[in-house]
Length: 350
Ligand SMILES: Cc1cc2nc3c(=O)[nH]c(=O)nc-3n(C[C@H](O)[C@H](O)[C@H](O)COP(=O)(O)O)c2cc1C
Image (cartoon, rainbow, N blue to C red; front, side):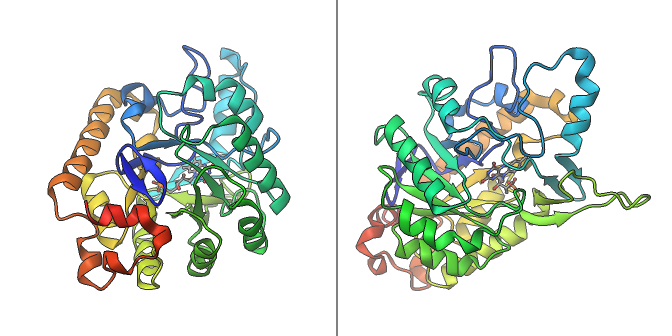
C-alpha cells in the first residue's frame, strides 16, 4: 500500500475516471460502459479504479442511458456513440456530458460487486449544495477505508458549465464534510495553479492532473462539428506534453499535495516522465483503454501489456531512484512538507 496524504493506493498506477465505467460490467455478458480491454486486465491489480463521474440524478448527457438495445438498433447506437467519442488526430475527442446512472444507483448496482477493487468515486455537480449532497451520500454508503478517495470533478468541459465560478465555494463547503480523502481533478484550461492553492487551503488530500483539454473538430467538407456538443474534451497522446507541463508547473509553483498524473499515458516511460515531472502516481486513460473497433481484437495482448506496466512501475518504486529523488535535489526536500502532507512525506522516504 502507498499512502498519499491519506489516499491509500495498492500501487502507483490507477485508472482514469470513466474508462472503466463503474468498475464492473452491467451483466455477465454485457460490458456496456466498460472498456472491452477490461476483460483481459485484472482490475484488482490497480492502485485504484476510478468510476465514471457520478451525479446526484441520472443524466443522459450527450449519449444515452438506455441499456436494452436490440441487435437491429446497433447502427443507431454506434452513430450516437460516434457523436460522443471520436478518434481524432493524435488522441480522442469526447463529450459524453456526464452520461451516468446517478450515485444512488451506483451504490445499489455496482458498489457491492466491486469490493475486490480499491475504488475512487468520482462525483460531479453544479453547486456547492450538490457537492455537499454527493459527499453526504458517499459518507452514508461507504465506510472509511472502504474506498480510497472521492474525486471532485469540477473541471469538465462537456457539461458546458463555468466550474471556476463555484470551485472555491465547493471546496469550502464539501471537502471538510467528507469522511474520505478528497482528490481534486484539475483542468488545464482553467487557472490550475490557483485551483491547486485553493485545494491546499481547503484540505484536499491530492490533485489529479489533468482532465481533458477543450477541443473542436469539424467535418472539413460540411463544417459540421463531429460531436453533438460541438466542443469536446481532447485526451490521449496529443495532450501528454500538456499534462507534463501542468504537473511540472504545479511543482514549480510550490504545490506540495500529491499529484496523480493523467494525460496520454500508455507506457512505462510515460510513467517515468510524469514521475520526473513531479507526479506521485499515474493514471491510465484513453491511450490504454480505447482503440478503434478492430483494435479490440488484440485485447489479450493489451491485457498483458497493462500487467507488465504495473509490474514495472512497482519495480521502479522498489529499486529505482524514485520519482521524488529529484524533489530532494531541487529543494523540495521531505522536511519542507507541511504536517498535513504526512502521507506524501512517507512516500518520499520509501
Ligand atoms: C471517453 C472519456 C470519458 C471521460 N469521462 C470522464 C468523467 O466522467 N470524469 C472525469 O473526471 N474525467 C473523464 N474523462 C477524462 C479522463 O479521466 C482523463 O483524465 C483524460 O482523458 C486524460 O487522460 P488520457 O489522455 O490518459 O485519456 C474521460 C475521458 C474519456 C476519454
